[in-house]
Length: 358
Ligand code: KG4
Ligand code: ZN
Image (tube, rainbow, N blue to C red; front, side, top):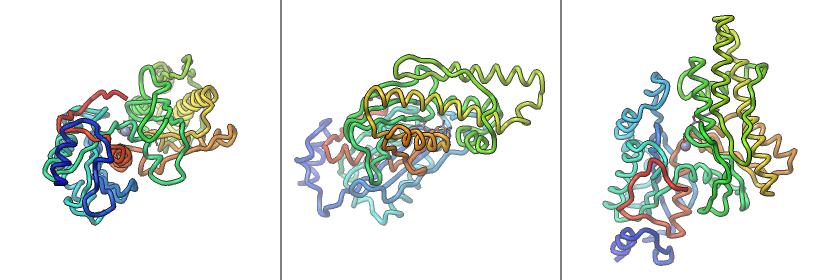
């Protein structure tokens, strides 16, 4: 009887939670799957808490200086089943005990998303359990709801990753709106592209961050001036390129002799731009609960600056643990859990979305 109820729910897009009564136990166990880019992730979430979180990061792209989409989807296919098995084992759970499956529907690389979405659909079908589709960028923000204290609503989140840079007003656990964003490159992309100019391996963000700690911000780059709540990083990237070309023409060893100082100048300049805009968004909206999320939120200078400025401005600041900053399935599961208990399930007709509406 419960089975029929599940299937009925899956045929429609969004249904009401009150119609659903969890099977035998009182606990809700969700298997979450993440495969939007080059990390294959699986996690188990019990009543909204991450109890296992496994990520297989694809190292193969490093030598190409960026993610190769075809290679990424093939690697997901190899990794996804062992990653799921390990997540289940770590949680001490068997597949038949799962209540629902949450998965990243987008945005991301279509071929990569396809692997996670197809597997989620077939698992949900074979286990007769509901599915919840998750927006990858919203899930980054939901990392703040892994452990208490939780931010109060409305909460302002600077969401910074390899493909996105957004100032998001979070109204509730499932409702968010973008107040501003990058007009061109994401800040993670700016780190990665500058890293390429400096011959650093991909992804260059963490490498630049580490090298920056040994240097000083002695080189100045022009700060992009963008009106309103948006930002732009493509001019910055070009300015760094011209600067490096001019210096290398004078001294071909300029990069190797000044690597730490270049990294520190680049990192601090990018983070200053973000923090200046974040301050303006906070002042204009009057929001005082402020956080960061996404891969670039692992940046040490960004974390320190948010804390320092937060004290100055009287904000309550929120910084996710390192394990939930870069792509992982734990955050997908937290987002999925909150959609699940609101009855925001999806049907078997669901398809991956390289670009996904907010
Ligand atoms: O969120 P994420 O793991 O994947 C996407 O959704 O894009 O973010 C990856 C991005 C990459 O651009 C990477 O260079 C950057 O996050 N990143 C960092 C740091 N750790 C990762 N950027 C600056 N400093 C870091 N410590
Ligand atoms: Zn991400």
